[in-house]
Amino acid sequence: MKGWMKNIRQVTPYTPGEQPKRPGIIKLNTNENPYPPSPKVDKALKEMDVSMLRRYPDPTCQILNDALAHEYHLRPEQVFTGVGSDDVLAMCFMTFFDGEQPVLFPDITYNFYEVWAEVLRIPYRKVPLDEHFCIQSRDYAVPNGGVIFANPNAPTGQILDLGTIREILDANRDSIVIVDEAYIDFGGESALRFLDEYENLVVIQTFSKSRSLAGMRIGAAFASPELIRYLTDVKYSINSYTLNTAALIAGAASARDRKYFQETVGKIVRTRERVSARLRSLGFIFADSSANFLFVTHPEIPAVKLFEALKEEGIYVRYFRQPRIDNYLRITIGTDEEMDALIRFLEGMILL
Ligand SMILES: *Cc1c(COP(=O)(O)O)cnc(C)c1O
Image 1 (cartoon, rainbow, N blue to C red):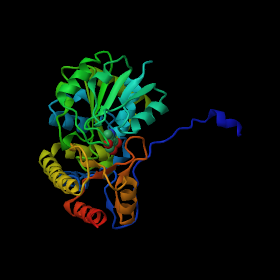
Image 2 (image 1 turned 180 degrees about the vertical axis):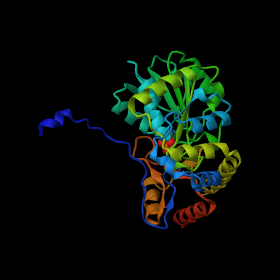
Image 3 (image 1 turned 135 degrees about the vertical axis):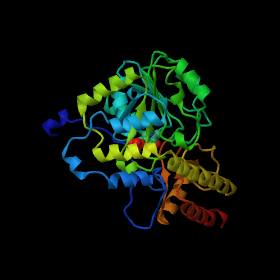
Image 4 (image 1 turned 90 degrees about the vertical axis):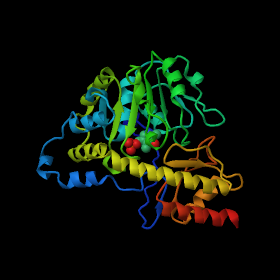
């Protein structure tokens, strides 16, 4: 063994969905938005003065934070932004989960939570979802070093009602509770309305899904000014210049265009409902989704077989080789045309 091996940090990384390069494929595997970002983003970027790029970006991210504060009726001091919500979540883990008790999150959820806990050496415990893949609030009413869950959950797409979230917040007055709302715009009610009531609440959102800006890498945390200050202190201790100038401009333009945002989200929700009915008529079984994807299983055909056959056809969906969910597929909602191609192929497989 090489001598320096003892000093190397070795980790098991998060496995993102494939980003295949081959042309003509239908990509329904990473929950990207099938529609382009707002035309206001296009305009703002075209009008951007490129000579600004010789300067460092604004470390306070003011135009973006102000735009978000305005859109969500918050104060700018309640907003923190970062390079995708993955960056914001990593900062939150570092800042808020520094205790000795285990941080709690569901056994089936966004796999990055476990990766960060491991990499940051944060003790954690995975709390099993019930047999319907639901979170039970009483499971979180135990001593802990923090709580995090996605709502709607990923990859299940299931939404937790605000009453249950309130129960979790009430049972955890002495812990920070993070609600990852990456998909909240596609269904369900945001926990943002609880911010004034619970000083231990952090709500995280992203521009990658409902705002069609996955390639720009923009995410946000909303919390009390006190928590946002702790978060900002950690950020300034690592890298003050996180979001670049173009991302700040694009993000602010997107946050201001509520009309386009609502239109595209509405289209995706309508497609989701139509596709849900079609897949159920083909025998697929799944809970109603509040996200921009469906999490489905079929009683006769193993998920892995469907996954391989779809991939062969050039239709990429997500399959998790993981306990409890290894007979499920997560299918992102694309355009109507993309979903029709998916359904036609599945009909061919199932009805023959
Ligand atoms: C996609 C996703 C994120 C991360 O999104 P970013 O692209 O990093 O903003 C965070 N949480 C969940 C549950 C997600 O599905």
